[in-house]
Amino acid sequence: MTRNTVLSFPSRRAVQAPPQRPLEAGCAVWLVAELPDERQCGEWLDQVILGTPHESMAMSLWRNQPNLRQSTEKLASFITPKWPAASGAPLLQVAVERAVTRAQQAIEQGQAFEGRLVGVYLYGLLAVVSEIAQVVLRGEDRDGQLRRWEYFSQPLLYWARQHGIERVLVQRAETPPSEVVLTGLRTHMTACLTDPVDAGYLAKHAGQG
Image (cartoon, rainbow, N blue to C red):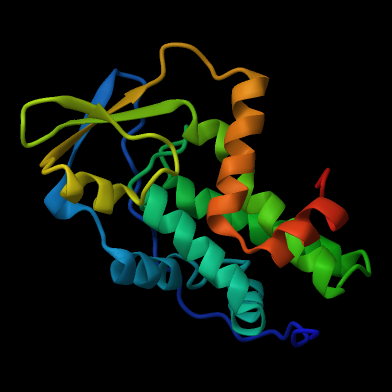
């Protein structure tokens, strides 16, 4: 079944996303009690696009392609809006901007069919994989054991609560991830965020962006 055509909506006043402290100095600590849950992540997505140049496009894509909104919310549950980009901006915000920008470019190039739009949006969303792989998260569990969050194994908040972790230590990886590691992580990330149909669109219509 073909999904609906993308429409535009008028923009509203911008809401500035709070910057996240860069990790250049070493590490940061996140209190698990302050991590947003799924509902709060969804609300954050709505707020962060308000008044931005890509607001109407994002709203249109999410309204007419709810699968893309779902994939974005899944990413939010894994990394939360607290995950920092190198610039200090929330990495989730960067991912949304990249995804929506690629969809907008596809439309401007006359490639507004469903498979291409879904594929390029997901390609942009997944493009933050290298920045995710450069950050390591650990926490002390209820038994005093230090645990590391394995990328996309579980939503971060669920993982922390499951193991009785109260604080998450956030550090830059000692060495940059290899291309092999990034390729494997991107494949795992795709499986976690998308359904088989959309993964097929990504592979067929946007394998190289």
